[in-house]
Image (cartoon, rainbow, N blue to C red):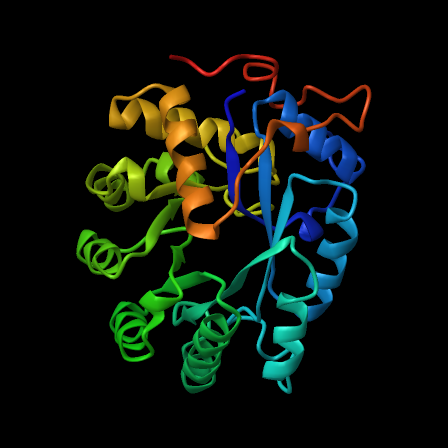
Length: 290
């Protein structure tokens, strides 16, 4: 089978209150029926990580990441390296450190705290030998400086939800990092993101939802969910002049290469019966284009 990975989602943050689904089983089944085979569910706090663990225990195709997001530092001001390491080593499902990074758009006033946290996360990633999931918004200079000074390339990782410049992408690629794109690439005002999509080679690219945020066109404005990564995949495939099938295959291989895992079709099983086709009627039960 062809794999398609939602390489960054927040399953524990879905409201499960809309027309799409009433429980996580329906969310996963909607994604499966749209061709999404695997998921990396990210925790931004320790509490969110515990929720993700409970979700993932019933699914072989859900992997996890754990960190303290730069915008959630106020929720865990006393977080410790040991506790984060324990979480990261608590299960084979936990394959990523983060998300972590810098956000000067929403919280420039906590710059010093963010930098200290980012440095600690990189050190922990090096210790536990797991790649980083990096959030970088309006913090290009400091992000690149810290990645260099802390030898983050030795841990590896991905710059998720990339919205920065081609120059930033080039510098990250030169350090060995992957670049991941969300539904923002489909937004009309996002010419700068599409320039980066054009620049980044297929073998260094991933796709993600970052759900419940950033639903892509044609479903922009509602709560995002993993099924919708199929819309982003199709948009980027068309933009790059390749088939959906090729882009799904290559981005899945990139996911395997970064995280040192091997995806398996035996992990992808239906655990749910009837589902709603709300907002997926054009992509449900359809093969990837060749």
